[in-house]
Each structure stands twice: as C-alpha cells, then as structure tokens.
Length: 122
Length: 306
Image 1 (cartoon, each protein chain N blue to C red):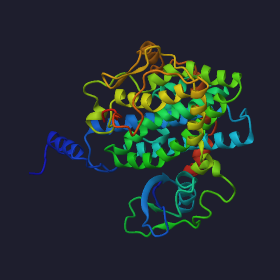
Image 2: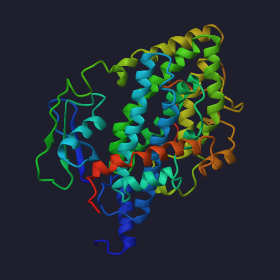
Image 3: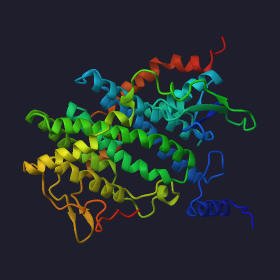
Image 4: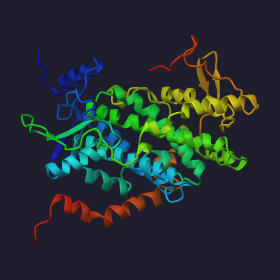
C-alpha cells in the first residue's frame, strides 16, 4: 500500500511543514486518514498529502480549513482549553491542605526557579 | 576521503550523530542502528496500543458524560500514537502486519505498566496523571533523538500527552478534595501503582547502552526517574498523598533523590510476559486482530479469485 507524507500549516501564512506519514490506497483515503491522525485536535489551518517518492508532484490539499479541522461540534475536551485553571486549582488545593495540616513535609528539592534549583543531568 | 568499508561508513555515521545531525528514513544506516531504532520504536508503538486497554475498560463506567467523552478521546489518542509510531517503525524495515502479529502472539514486548489491572476510577486518575506524566518525561527527552521521523512523531505526541496530564491531574484533584472515600480511592491506586511506575523507567542504564550510543535515546533511565521524582513527588505530598517508599526523600548533599530499589524480580517477570494481565490483554488484542482480518483485506484490495 502506498505511503503518503502528511503536511500541515499551523497558521495561514506558514509554509506547509512535513508532520508525518500514513498509508492509504488512494489520495481520498490518504486525506481522510491524515486529517484524523494529525489534525483532530485543531493542530492547524490546512493539511495536505503527497505520495512518497513523488517529490516533484504538487501537494494534494485537503478541503477543510481551520474552522472545520478538529470538528464543528464542541470537542474542547480534546484540547488544553478544556483544562484551563487546573494548574491554579492544584496550587489552591495545595495551599488549603497545607493550612489544614494535610501536606506531607519531607525533604524536597528547592522550588523551580529558585537559585538552588537544579535540573538532573541530561 | 569518502568512507568505503562498512566500518568507515559506520564511523562517519556515528560522527554525524555526535555532531547533532538528524537521520532521515531511507538514508544509509548501520544495521545496529536500524535494529536498535526499530526495536525501540516498535515497543513504543506496542505500548501505546496496549496502554489503551486498562483505561478503555473504564469508558462504560465513567462517572459522568463529560468524563466519558474526555476518557474516550484520550484512549483514541493513545491508539493514534500507536498508529503513528508503527508507521515510523515500518520505514525501518518491518511491516505493520508483522509487528502486530508479533505483538499479539507474545513475540515482542510492551511496557510493563500495561500488564497491570485498572481496578478503580482512582486507577484511571493515577494513570492519567502519573503514568502519562512518566511517559511525558521520557518522551520529551526523545524530542532530541537522532532519528528524525521519530522526532516528528514526538512533536505530534508530546502535546497530546500534556493534555492527558491535565485531564489526569483534574481527576486527581477531584478525588483528593472530595470525600474520605474518594481520597482513599486515589491513595489506594498510588499504593498499587508506585512500584510499576518505578519499573517503568527501567533498571539503571548499562555503561554501554546502544540506544544512548546511537542517540536514539538521549538520557539515562536514572536521570529520567530523578526528573519524575522532582516533578511529581512534591505535588503528591502537597496533596497529603503518601508514596509507598519510606526512603524516598531529596538528599541535599548529593542533590538527588534517595529511593528504595523496587522488586526487580517482579519487573523481569513482567518483562518476560508474565504479568497479572498480560495474557488477558494479549488475548483481547489477538481476538480483534483475527476477527477483523477482513478489514485489512478490504483495505489492501480484494484478493484475486482462486
């Protein structure tokens, strides 16, 4: 079965970037699979495929744009926006638990950003 | 001078990697590189596909519609990661059909954490936050790997894992700030999952680890485990959740975490394919693989009449 390279644009003015590949019997199925595997979280505003090896051929550009990629119904649970505020909630709950004496006080590394903080060896 | 022998070509290839160059599919590569990369990426793909099963069993039992939607989307993502990674592995010389056949027949491996049962909704919260957290520590380190198609896959996968992390963290916050029973549910999950999580990072890396040598992996097991501790243990303690390791504490002098070695015999038992859920999960996958063979045949085109 042919391999198709998948390309995407994050913003309208971007060039198409190579983002991955899929296998499909024809260009129509390649576009369906490219959309589903690489753009269902609203990762871009345009997508395209090109059969591997056809380096001189034009890209086959998918028909859906930024508004439709990722679905028209509310699928925010597929994206970070559905979880806005979780980090702040974690901090708030931690503060409340510290006040209530629930927090476990054991030796821990200096908080990130402090001068003593250290990243493990890469 | 242009390299001519296999050794010279290999040395030139290694020099490119050491200089930070990336390798594309289809380029010449030493057999050792190809085999190491294939085995590593194939196991990663297997783990994504098998990792969908423990959480997948909770989709019908999710407590609300919102949770059901988000859990379904997460499980879909994990299978999607498998799909992307099998594609990357295929270019290294093994077909997806062969890889899946080897997986469901127990000839290749998948990550140890996915050999365990997900017994409660607390386990779903644990997996979402801390197993995905451990995976993200690993996968972020792979963004700088030497094999470019794998890096491209990681650029796709890491943002999704960050999303899963938020999903898991929200579930955890809900449980720990809920009733006594809800807190106990999460604490019980931590107690059962901590050792498999330590196993997840593997034993300390060997002196000559081929994956590190070829830049397919970029950091040692131990350094990744230490980063996991620094990121998540303080957060667990902030929530009043204990970790079943009495030695676990930050050591000011060494600038590292002290921790108790887990039971490595249990780890090797699971690696050999004898975990609590290994056989059941493989049987599930094998059943679907066999009964859905017709889908693959349709996709590949109808076979010629005999």
